[in-house]
Image (cartoon, rainbow over all chains, first blue to last red; front, side, top):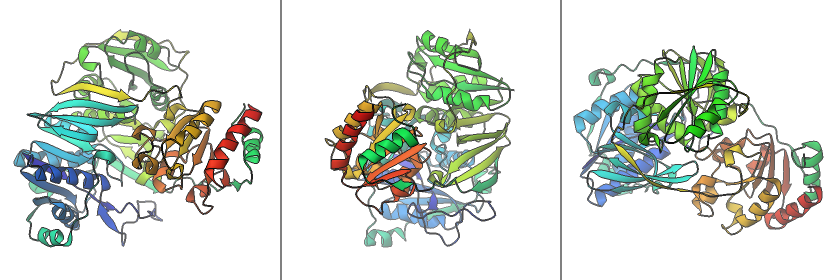
Length: 251
Length: 313
């Protein structure tokens, strides 16, 4: 069984982002970039399937600038077998990403696509579901457990009220949530080995997908700032303020 | 122009998030219709017809809609979408699962998690875990939108008198089946709908200690939440989690106990009206967003809080 894993290069989750002064976006120059944390979980899950003998090959795919190669290399160092980069310096919206992935899925014929539930930059949470729609495949979003069966997979999903289990027919798209696994750190020998693994590079034109944006970003601004309040000394004082000043208790 | 709101429900009850979504739809020009797709859900349809501002309720009843399977719901929404300028659902796990599937089938770039409507094609949405706010304008013919419920005050559940109209089901896609669910049972209000939330972090040390928070919660009708650190440490189940990767809440009063205030957590609660922080580390970032902070050992302060509340309630 082949598994395809999309990976996105994003600003590292530990970096405090800065909004550009001209309000056109968020500063990415000279900022530490990493693999989207949810994608690390997908790579880990796919590699574990390979180690368990259920997956035969793991292909890491990224869409983005030339530097997205580094993100693919990270996936290869974690244990993916090969990479595909669809290179563009344009910002690619989730719908266009899903269209590109659809073409790659049709070329590679994986039985399973494991994707992060969302990227931590635009927080869209769309790509996996869109890809499933375009392919007419089943989807299991926000997975915290994946059990592969014969021609199907049983997936436990993290939903608002608790957990839900569904059975999807394969091929399918699974998007992963935080508790699915804990991604490994790549070892130095594996990082060295990853340098020799192949990465194919394509362009959106070669894939035949129009990536023109449908949404225009008119401006990007800082969120309203919340001012620090006061420290109180005793719980009695706290309750008094909540009751009489903020009026959120006992009303 | 008419907007279609996809109702979230469990076949017996209309979920509160639907009321916030209707509020967002009302901020857009034109009428608001609501789609109730389910099985044996007449009660939900009736409830939806009474929601303030709803002109019409479309009801599709069939077995394939019983468990909100996106593969079955999406073709129904797509079939109806031709009559609408906007299709909206709450940006919770129900809407996030469904709407991108609808959008892709319509060849539309969805607008996720809107917090404000600027005009019929322009919306505000948080990006980077709420550390930036983007204003985006859609050029698609139909706008497919998920709504961050904390961005819009719920409309009244009563007062409307929408017409109820049955629509045909669109069939079972035959791709996915429901196996079961473990829904946390609680007498307390839902996290996202509660007027007061009291949350515990890693400082709680273990799951048993959350009983202290529950006692306070029951005195003031609060929901109990947790930081990701507390969830990852196994103190409480994941559905307690408040934060960027958990639930986004904006109650009137948010009490953070033993929570340091990682950006991740702040993203889920910083729009609360009043924030209280109880933490032994006076340098904890949570104090930078708290209206009232108290530095000290939570194991003495929380029981004290319970006693003091007894005096005023």
